[in-house]
Image (cartoon, chains in turn yellow, purple):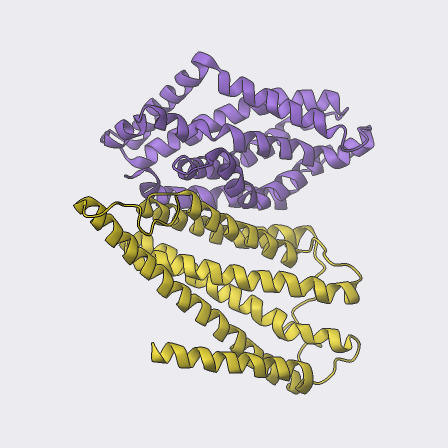
Length: 237
Length: 224
């Protein structure tokens, strides 16, 4: 627990420093100026989201293979962390797009894909809420999670073929791409900081979910033993 | 019993059950018709406009109708707990799922066979020269719709608010299918119709990916 506490404090410090670096240390962008600085949190939140979604996919497959409740706990924690990161990405994008593109939103491949992903994983969380039996909840949400993960590349390809407007990848995007070294360092710092936040959220949520599972098991045991009225600590009426 | 034979027997059971009353089919056809008619108020249904919006309209109405029609597929089995009897039978769980997928594919095809000519008449779009290619696009799109829809119907049949949940799970997953089907259909409605192969390939890819996934995961869907 002590490690968890100190790492949370460390990540909190890191994200504050990353914010400071993105605002004051990173060099000014030639045409977009201040608004470009949102990019230091926009891109890292997407990287963190895709990392979290990969964790979810691994957890879903592992749950179906082993049937250990800890994988289900990891799956739901990862999904919630991913939805948070996705929401940050979807919110920071339009803030940047309005002054630069002149519009809040456009139905471009990357924007549409992430929006659909956001909807899919929110449906995943809704599905969990609507299934009562814990084992069935875990199995069905794992199956749906795998379907959603398989759908992501198809959504991207179909939108890519259809219409696209998002800026081409700045880093490693062929000729003329690349960042100023000063920008690169700040970006790296921001990626590490946002990843740290995502991992802390994920782990805390994981601990919470494990506690809930344990609690639920104990409650069931209690009920079968008929020691006490079952009304104590029920999550929902 | 071989999976193939079990599937055939279960399919005949699904078809007999439906064609005794035809209630699901008639309700779905009328629903799709309502959607098609309502769309005429969303834009000016001249021939030129219909060519632009028609494919989208057609597929949206199929997707909506499908997401409602697929609901009873597994929910019907829960009514008398017949799903338990199916599970106890010494057959592969994929046979149960495959029979339902095939039955839903047939039901959806019936809906489309009725709806497409009606659409063609109402929106003044000529489909005579492209019938064969259109059937290919419709079949590929319908496979994708019924494969994912049947799987999610198994999931949502156990949930609360299942009528609302199924479209919620199904429609976002079908985004690539909708885009590909609409674009492929649109390529057949222009002056010089030529089937766009990219979209047909994407449709086929969608079908293969999710058919394989449901084959791999069907044990978890049908178990208890």
